[in-house]
Length: 311
Ligand SMILES: [Zn+2]
Image (tube, rainbow, N blue to C red):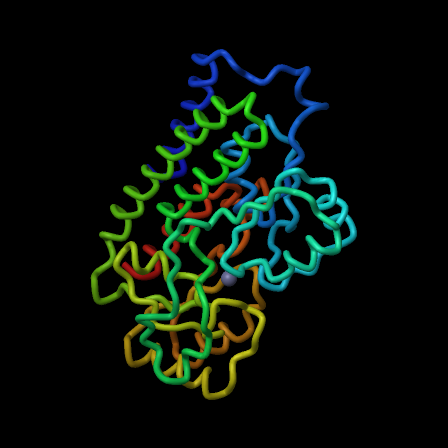
């Protein structure tokens, strides 16, 4: 049984809790009077949706498949931000577009960076050699560990309850139900990665997305093709040579490449080193009919792909 099927069963719990507490949204509330909420990425948007249900009018800025590091806001994004009462961003520098966008829109919204309170990590413990560490600052990819998404969920519930106290009880109940799903996801990941021999637990990706995952689940993030936390740079010839050397030296079995970046360099590195290229989701969910339409399914897809490639 995959986690995805298990999660479907758990999804009934919030509905049950809604029935028990007797505060299902009435149709009279759905058009007018709802809190106007913006989320930046599809992943943040999904967590907001899990906590808010239909109680808020939610706009997600980034289209599915968009790289959050290099997103360029459009006129409709300025309008959505200008109109919003609460804005949820991932934070830790992920959304380089956000501050200029807030200024352009003249936003008066409450801006919540959902990663506030997560213990941020830097570039410590990277094994990819001298040419592989030019980035400073915090790693924004906290969602690769569901324990950090527990923090997001609490931050979302607190902000929504403060902005819309009439529905605080329901936000809290939805958050509690979702948090138990995140805890189940964490347990499921531990079971899955146990199938991977210790010597194979080495990750190489297109950019440095797996720091939190590696730390939590006992992997080594050997390096990345773009050796930093953003996709907004091009690796030098020395950096490419360094990651190819590291793949050979550490016996890395696969290069994991996100669906939101151009795979050309990863394809070249995989070809040069003779390892598999494994597509994963990193900064965006899939479309609604795809395999990573929610955060829970995103992690299910990625962990299953990693286990298949490395076990
Ligand atoms: Zn990224």
